[in-house]
Image 1 (cartoon, rainbow over the protein chains, first blue to last red):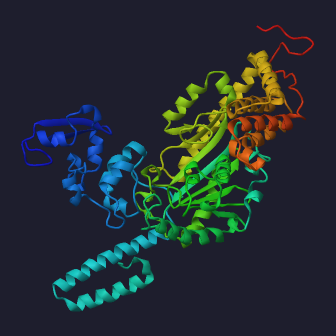
Image 2: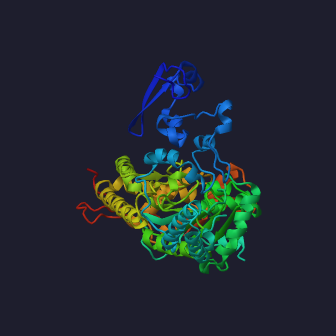
Image 3: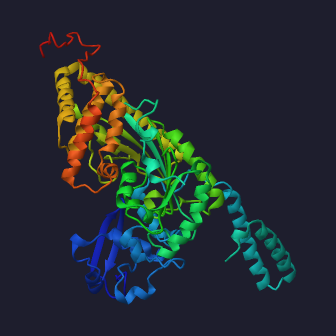
Amino acid sequence: MKCDFCDKKATVFLTQLVEGQMKKVCLCESCAQDKGVTDPTGFSLADMLITGTPTSAILGAPIFSSKKRQSDEKKCPHCGFSADDLSRVRRFGCSECYDVFRSEMEMILPGMQIGMTHVGKVPRGHEEKHLHEEKIERLRSQLDAAIQSENYEAAARLRDELRQLETLFPGLSPS
Amino acid sequence: MMRFSTLIRHPAEWMIGGTVDNAVVLTSRIRLARNLRKIPFPGWATAAQRREAMDLMLPVIQELRPMKDAFAQSLSGLTAVQKQVLVERHLISREHAARTEGSAAVIERRQTLSIMVNEEDHLRMQSIRPGLHLRVAYDALNEVDDALQEQLPFAFDRKLGFLTTCPTNLGTGMRASAMLHLPALVLSNQIGQVLNAIARLGLAVRGLYGEGTESLGNLYQISNQSTLGESEPQIIEQLERVISQVAMHEANARLKLLEDEPIMLHDKMGRSFGVLKHAWLMDSKEALNHLSVVRLGACLGFFPKETVRLCDTLLMEIQPAHLQLHCGQKLSPEQRDERRAQIMRLHLQNVTSPVTVISDHNHHPLSDSNPSPEP
């Protein structure tokens, strides 16, 4: 079996109960050392999982921001908040961080909240805006497809339709 | 604009009950957390970004109908003592008081509505009412929230609700809480059991000044813990149900104490009254504990009814920052203890000694001339 962090042979296998779910990580000798897994007292799999990238979050990909990994550490493109910041302060940098770190967040939520989905107040006009957002999104991809297939007649029609929608909600146009 | 001295000259109606029954539940509070879309949260923003966000929000807040002629002040324009006074009155949080440049507080005249700008979230707004009236407090705040939403782009996600700096506030962004005075549950050793039951329901119990504070004067705050997965009315209804049950337990425990242990209760009243009326040095803790006894006594008829109001006023007035503000100078802890005792003596001057109270169910009535034998 290979190490989850590099391609070396895994010799350390760690299983822990995180939020009521069994999580497993396989590590090679040096990665285990690197991440402090050999010291059971100072190690929590939850911390490791919380900062994992979404694709491999289940088996905790690089998390501890060792210097060599700093360059590819996940960051919010909007405010620069990093996965490392998140695991340190357990708070977010801006509203956009919730999109960037959605998978990390969904892992920590069950421990702190009763549910995973908001059922309370929705700001007035938000529903309507959301439907438009979805429609604009759909039209844009149709437009892209039309241009790709050189169907310029359809493209022109879609473009006009898009323009009309975007004038209704100017805030929704891509910045 | 309203001056600080005008704002805090009198205790707010909500602090002293007004015409509302506040024998057990002193106050109900609702707090909502809101943030602006795409602008870094205050803790992650640069000073310039924080100022920018504040400049965007402040004019909109001051335009709110209830905020006409409100007290509005940048935290950098308040002294440490003034900020602490606002904390002692529960108008701003301790966290907020620690901030300066780029943060502000807007407080409505009657102090029932206050809005913190750039606390942990861009906006933390709160509404307070006397007694158990969470729903009333929520409705008032919800209107303010609606009005603000029309002009400010709040960060909202269909799945996660209102986006907040800390994920513990996601969803409704709402913390509903009530302050309860539970001396009889403490005296009858039932408090541990009650607090455990509350915690098992997923609700939080805290002391007088919120998170991490000790319970002084038998005052407890009960609030919801979770903000995601339940609607605002659901959270409020559950909380009101639990709180009225706790309040009922307390009310029963009070009557039972009077019935079962009248001598102990009379003794406590006399002692606390004596200390408050005659001591010359008194720290906060001692003061709060004696005030708690006298407040209980006033509810049970040992003291005139208005004494409850007096206790609630004093509860605020004897806090360290309030003492220093009224003195107009910084006081050492020893000077504060002296001043606190002086205020107590002054205010209790006209309160008569505790009278003998007989429980309706007591078949061996007590009286000073003919004390009944204790079982």
